[in-house]
Amino acid sequence: MAGTRFYLGGGIGSGKSAAAACFRTLGAVVISGDDTGREVLASGTAETAAVLRRWPDAATPEGSLDRQALGRLVFRDAGELAALETITGPGIRSRLMAAAESHPDAVVMVEVPVLRDFAGPEWPWIVVDAPEGLRMARAIQRGSGMSEGDVQQVMARQPSRSEWLAAAAWVIDNSGDLAHLEGQCRRVWDEIRRP
Image 1 (cartoon, rainbow, N blue to C red):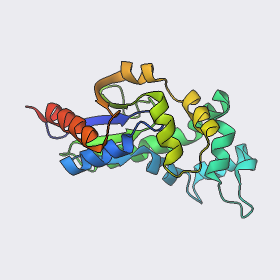
Image 2 (image 1 turned 45 degrees about the vertical axis):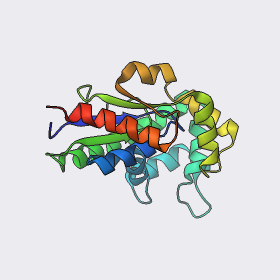
Image 3 (image 1 turned 90 degrees about the vertical axis):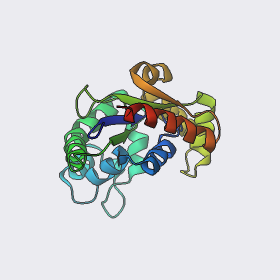
Image 4 (image 1 turned 30 degrees about the vertical axis):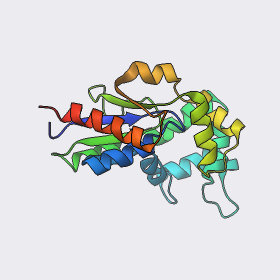
């Protein structure tokens, strides 16, 4: 099924990045929505300038964007998060689409932390799932400096576990160890590659 496109998603701490690494090993081209978001909000972009105008408290003393400060500002309020997405969404979409189109014959997975059809609803979702308590523990342990309250704030603004599962064409259970995750990814890979 060369040329097939998928979204790879899941809430914070679900393990979607670990699943992405597994799929890369299996042969998929994985495009990171987080990395694309960072590109859009790099120094000197029009989006960064617009964000700093909208949220001047997210600026460093040197005038660049403090992403952690921005996160604290937008993740506590759905309206603020929507305003950020209005600024960054078009740039993220165009970059993701260009990256996917540059691999016309590959299986492409766009790894994203939100339930948003950047490329349209025809791309099916592969959702990485784990119980909320385990996701919380992973998010705190991964060294991002986030507290339990920070993680709860992000979880509250992301789709719920039931929303992720409802959107899924395939679910990867990541409630076990790495070997279990790799087996889950192999199962999905075999299914999506089946003629």
